[in-house]
Length: 297
Ligand SMILES: Cc1cc2nc3c(=O)[nH]c(=O)nc-3n(C[C@H](O)[C@H](O)[C@H](O)COP(=O)(O)OP(=O)(O)OC[C@H]3O[C@@H](n4cnc5c(N)ncnc54)[C@H](O)[C@@H]3O)c2cc1C
Image (tube, rainbow, N blue to C red):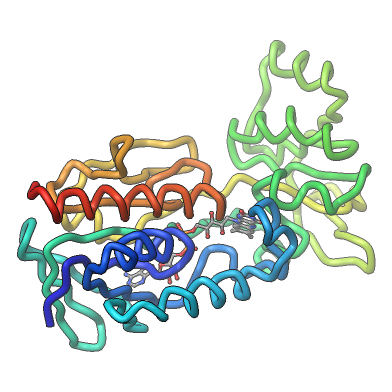
């Protein structure tokens, strides 16, 4: 079957792109594997009119509105390969189906590589987070930890005092220099040396246990994960760029990638993402794609 545009990833960015194309009466297909990045958390914050709503509810409402448009189709599954070029891309899924498309929108998000600290993965999105704007407010005003995985702990160490008393655990992963120590001190951030051994949930927060047996009760912990892209962008030959958290797909202000006919939006094309930014970038990708469908590449 053939579509004006196949959108790979049917979460916030992909559906926002799809909505613009659907409203332009274009024939589109969204393919989604059903694993949005925020699936580990019960509440999403910071998206206008939906502050505090469960992430799956936001997505379900968006999908039901999108599917009202008669030119939209949905396939639940995983894309394994995209080949071809503008006006004639071939999209192949793990379940053996294939589709043709004039344009491709990559909206497949990223996956997080968490530090290997025992107990941490189970608390991801519940008591361990990466975005203070998303989850800092709920932690109240005391006892927030930052677990260093690299120098990326510095921004967290400097920001989080606005949300509560902050301790930066260097975890043998990062050694601040004199200037950085002075910056942390000026912000009131306490610095703890030594490696962490494990973390566990408590009735009200978490307990971080160090390898030297010191125990720190905390309301929550922040870490900076490494992010990983699906191989599809590289397969298509899209230029990538480095962000502090890992590679992302390089796009211009119209969300166009370096490959004609391929657009990218959401977390996979942004260093630090959110539902709001994914929706904004998705809307732009939808409009830009429509523009090239009208005028040619
Ligand atoms: C723990 C946690 C909590 C968060 N809390 C908040 C919050 O409170 N507020 C906020 O604004 N943001 C929050 N975020 C960030 C938010 O989750 C992301 O910014 C947002 O999900 C990005 O949307 P997206 O559409 O780009 O990608 P995603 O939502 O990650 O969706 C990508 C979709 O593409 C699919 N996909 C991937 N590969 C393929 C493939 N090959 N074929 C088909 N489908 C594929 C995936 O299964 C997924 O459904 C949080 C993130 C995390 C990790």
